Length: 193
Image (cartoon, rainbow, N blue to C red):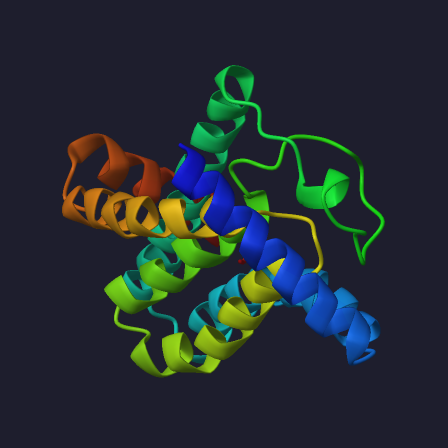
């Protein structure tokens, strides 16, 4: 545990000094939060595209599975925060961003962005995956450099997000998920979406 603490501490101090010495606070502040808003915008755009332009329910099911991947991990994050509490790095370094002082582990931003990213890849949105990859990496780096999260808050869960997406996509033929998809598609069709 001391090795993890030493690594987290060293990375936090180094990045914080680098950012403040190079006057990058505004850039880090922007990139630590802004990219997360592009993810739901993409899902909405893709849903509308496959509804009105191409009329493709199979692609809409892919959008639903991307959504499911994100929701599954947000639920798990909420559950984990009940049992695991990790202070944010702000008591070691000066945080660049103002935020509510709460649990640092696991990172909701990292959970949403990485599960979204790997779900994109798993649903054959390879070009979109490569488009979002630099923004997701920059956002998560910015959250570490901004003093909001520790390095291991992001890194440890990276592996689990990949596993979660694999689990979700291995269950794309699950009869309950297929019925849920069918229901959602019927409702959305009824309201012309």
